[in-house]
Image (cartoon, rainbow, N blue to C red; front, top):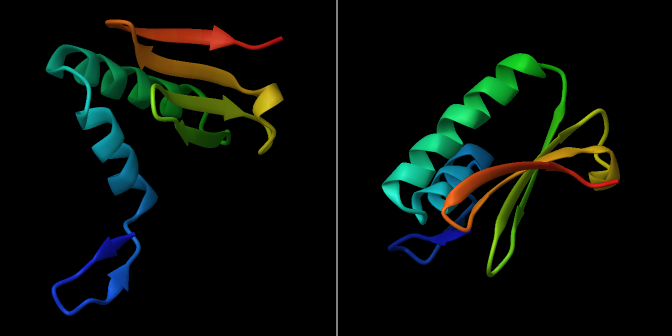
Length: 87
């Protein structure tokens, strides 16, 4: 949500919100995360993209449903873009 000069609240698109989250990382990590996101979207065109922006981590998951437990997750942190699966 963003407040405009007139005080009206406007919701940002989910793409814009994700771009802002990724931009908080170093240029190298942000670039790597964008490349991986692009590849994941091409490889899994029908997947649900789940985004969790926590205070200390950003996690992006791809799965067959909205259930996080079924998703493969990408997390750009600790100086690396990490790909993991929670079992």
